[in-house]
Length: 423
Image (cartoon, rainbow, N blue to C red; front, side, top):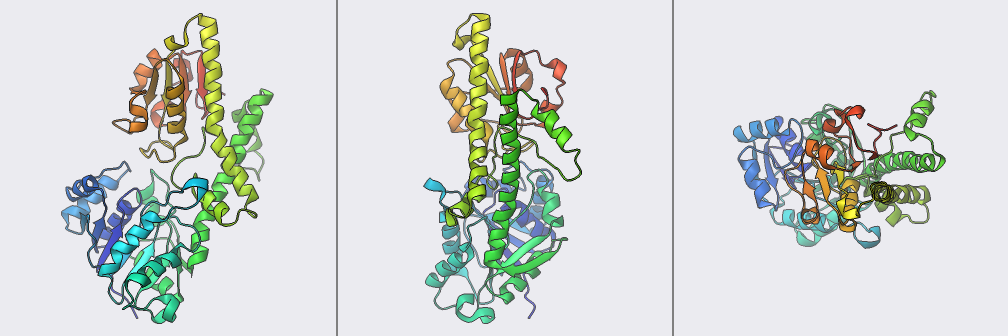
């Protein structure tokens, strides 16, 4: 039976939830966005955005002006509910589903027969079944897939996002989606929901496979980045340019080595592999090692900076407090404002804690520093950093930094983790 989705509720209005909400609104559906952040809610209701993402501001403004998108701190009845909240990890890299639990329990009171609940948050295998358990406990008057299969009053599915920050408003529409249901009918109903705006293929499977698919995609990327990062360590040890090496190796028709960097950040690639390791510790040996390699890279960068500082103090016959270090880039990837799990933030914070002199930070995509950095780091413009710094630490290859020609760099000590100035 065809299901009408006249009203769609999106729980969590962050980097994924808000674009997804506007995507559904663009299909002409009424969307109720929910977030605990009052500032985010008020900003969205003014037709503005609280995050940086190209083209999102135009989409939100249009959706709000048409009356198709409204935000609230309270969950209201809807035909479909999407959960798009964070899933960080706790100590020993165990998945933290507390946000998903809170979102599930906030939905429970307003659930009605025929509703669809979709978990979008990146989650460990079995998370969708856990959402069902929470809802079953709170709504014993309704039936669920584990009880009656396709005939359940409430349908549940898992559909992870797979978009690239900076291109979300394109990829959200064009990319294929993997949709896993707790029953075949659940998957089919969720597929109909996403087909409202997705131009790519909506491929149905079961929930556990869909959950593992998301973790697999990000772990694959993490392993490949780890190979590049490990190569950079080896090349430094052997006095070889890793950038030239990769360029040459990639001329092989079946070799495609990624570019190394300061580490791996973001809420997905830096986190998701640990979900697999936590559930299959004896089997996930390669995935664990790759994660350890990438987690180590920021510490290696810090050691490079310390070595440069020692050389600067010796050559200039000055105190360490007289040396200024500038860290260029704080986001976890180029040309966005997202600092989650960013190795650049980790490196900058540790250098500021350790260095007795001035530490500058240049991040064109933010207006102020987080509390973690505010006390000891000065947010400044690129021109000032290039003028004042004795040591430059290029951590993120933002377009503003790539626009600087190598001959414009006057500093003797440059730690370029992205290879845009030094080969």
